Image (cartoon, rainbow, N blue to C red; front, side):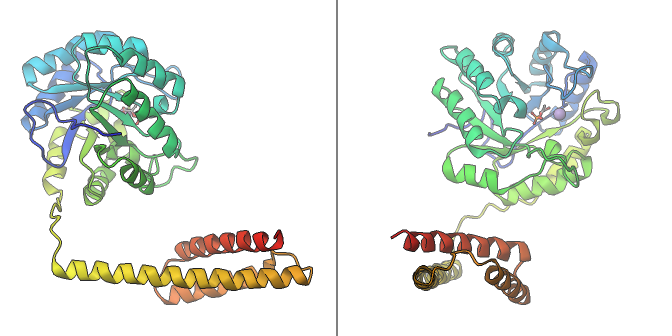
Length: 355
Ligand code: PEP
Ligand code: MN
């Protein structure tokens, strides 16, 4: 899949692209006040949830279509582009009819292929060409995320972006939703032209984490940020712990360090060359280790010994992890490496056994 830019007419190609606004549109006054404050700090795209997917019934489920004219006022009076979340065919049709510029799909919707297909079908053949932003599903399933993006792509939309908003976990410790950065990194590797935004508000779940998460996203070369901002965060009807005032957002954005140099110097090329060579050595050592392992497999076969010998594996694990720590490598990392090597080793010995 090849994607097009998600910038809207007149916007400059600058990192980060920032989308900001309240979790939910609550009242016309809250929508307008927040929008004007955000426009004043230079934000060009306004977000506000009109339809809110809530975990349990009984909470504020969004103002509904009644809030759409408020967003039209934001366009006219604050001169901003507007974005909202859609989860059904009806939402799509109403949002497009109201002139919403950008749509996003929430984490609970991305996880549901039927809902995704319904949205894609509603978009197909219409005159809305995007941008459509697809949040990651609540569960850490990269294929499901890519599948959702593909459904929108197959509806003919090319201006697609992905939003990383973290993944649900039973224990909520530091983060509301675990970042698991390796998942969006793999997404970017698989779909290099796909614009990638981070949602530090829903990952962190608290105000203090917005600045460090945004900086991390910039350091990982994300294209943009979508941040929840409210004129009176403490009075917000949803997600109040994670919303910040436009003024605080401006402060955070001004402090971001953007490292944008791609220039490779001689010394960097030399270091990369060293890495290539070391990787080659690593592969040669691994393959040598597998050969020895196969010989052991042959021995075990001839002497009727089982392939898996737990005590030996335990001994290796304990010893190597201790050595790794002495060499400044993390315990969890070493354990994963050893487990992967052991798994391949067992696979090769089983092959010998069945020859
Ligand atoms: C939101 O952006 O307000 C929202 C509901 O987020 P998520 O789908 O990431 O939970
Ligand atoms: Mn929210």
